[in-house]
Image (cartoon, rainbow, N blue to C red):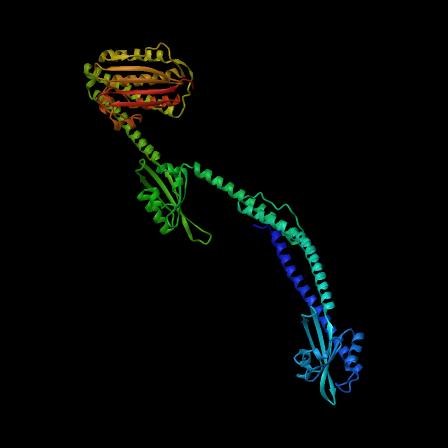
Length: 587
């Protein structure tokens, strides 16, 4: 693209060229016409002077030829006398007898045929090689035109003068055009450079480079325009920084929100989706943009709420169930958003995952029911046997000892249950601080084995212990012992006679895996996800008969998590169960 100053200069020079050319041609023609008119006047005057000097009393004078030659010398012009029939009677430069008839000459015809007072004609002479001007006036006798006196003048000198004038004018005009070009270039650059810089700054602003500024400061209106562009650029930069800051804040809020956000236009197409809703739908939220909400959410309930909100233009709140990719319960809050004129632009849907809340509510209700049920059994037993004693059974010593033994066992069971509940509550609320020390896990496993030795021998079980002598980790010794004791006690309780229990320790880099494996009854797959819930029992009758409270594995899980570890379970019905506790060696 040509620069602006080049286009301005070219246009200016083109205009000046045609202006100067027109002026030069007009001036040359005007001067030429002035010369010619002057010569015509002179030639007519000369013709009248010649006519007066000839003192003609008739065209047939004998000495006319000599008289004409005599008069032509002082006037420096060719003089010719022609009669009415066009015959040349006398000529100052040629023999009249050898000359042709001049009746058809324009200047002669103007006087004789047209009756004009004078005749003027200019034509090129091929014989002489230059143009001649002819002026003819009538010769009258008694009021009749008897002939004409014609005076001819060479235009060779005039043509040379005109050619010289044209050359001079051409040179002058060329110099003027050259000076005009130099001045025009300077003026054009002075105007164009600030304009070009302003255009460049405008292009940069269009390309979102808001640091661009007009450095040149021209005077006048261009200076005002440059200042206006700089102010505009500064204002745009400030506004864009605010917009970007707001966008970053909004993006940060949306990106880190735990609730899913979906922005849908009035046509049902998704405009925006945050990361949380992508996780809920197990899809990339960037793929949602521009698609219909039905394709994105793949849930009839939510799509129905979106369509209802778009139709009714009112806020809607409801719970919806998702079954893909996981079963979830979502609290959906939908509200329309409108433009400046109040027209509907679309709707905003905010989805809160309340699956855990509902699950916890269910667990809380189940916990209350389980606690009530667990407390009810020993209390009912104590109350029943006490009433029996009060009704007279105290008189029977054997019955008295039997009932008191039952009351003692039930009160012990009630005591253990309450202690476990209080202990679990303290662990969950982190009321018991973790006292870190170096613990030899092999030694802890040995103590646990000594604790359950009688039960193992009574059921004829085989208990296999780790072969290592020392395996050290950081943790609280009592908690680690309680973890292993609960797992081994469960293995003893649920392993039939003649079964085998294996306790092993496996070091995995900076972690230690404590495994308790048995050949017991096993656990069904459907029970595995709820195995660590409070009061959850796989075999409720057997668990209660074994004296368990249903809180052992829940306590184990929280004790493991207090050591920043995790617990895994692998089980098959009829083949056995393996619990693996993985804890870091360093806390």
